[in-house]
Length: 386
Image 1 (cartoon, one colour):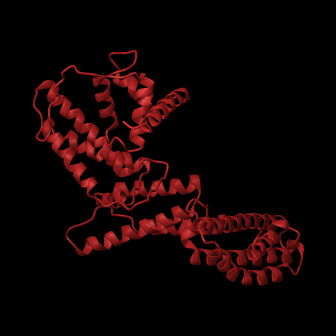
Image 2 (image 1 turned 45 degrees about the vertical axis):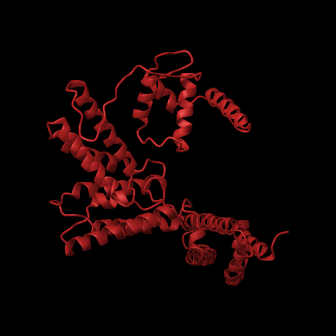
Image 3 (image 1 turned 120 degrees about the vertical axis):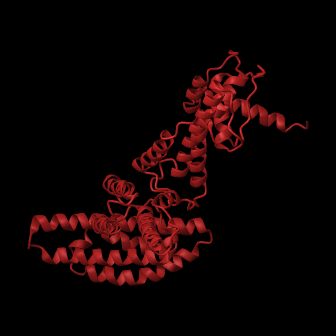
């Protein structure tokens, strides 16, 4: 049975979406009166749920509906202003009054139920321009002088932010991220003026996982440029290991990312550096037989693991083991190269490493079903005492 307070919320919000009340003179007073009750009702309804997930779902639903109504009313009011000019002033003023009341309710939810708001929820359209302007001014104020070593990098950061805001809109999560990110840069700049041991912009980008493609590629190019200036392969490896150590030692904020759909900045750079180190180590082994300190030679005895799995199935099993963190190797390419060299498939004595890599990143549905049957067979066997 629906809670009375929840029903009151639905009735109040449905007043706006019906559109009929918007034409009536008494609407604003009716809505504002209901809005005062709604704030206390929201608290009662929120705490009536015993499960935290239900509390969060309740707030996210109300919050999303409010934003939808605010956007709808904002667009309709702007369109009416353009079409009617000075006509229907009473109706336009009424709608603007309702809009302000809805915004007040939105601020109330943000202040009292911030932890329950969905980070992926887009902000109301009405606030987009003001937020973009505020953020642009903030980053402009934080701009670095032309002779600063981080000047080019910071310009790329600003361009990435502007591009993101234009393309995908502004979510509550992005707004919180960028506000905190800008404050951190400001704190670092102030701290660097007072202390000789400066924190670099690169450190902040790693800590906040600022993983835009342009920033990732620029940081990558800095490492490449430094390594290319060194002639000795052994010294190149030492340089790359220093970079790896510096990157890994930066504390990264948990669940923090500029782009949620991109790989983390730290993980990408570390994986790339490991690949480069592996490349130079193999070069040392191939051309001189000299190994850098701390590494071990791989003696090829010709021994291979025989398996009934096909190459497709082997790739799928390895991928499952990697994604479930049963295998802890960070370097996928290196792992697949090793398996290709030391494993026989059902039909092939020699497996191509490139073929295994292609299968690993393109698991077919039929292969997934075959592996699923194998896993069920293993589960069945594990139920029997051994």
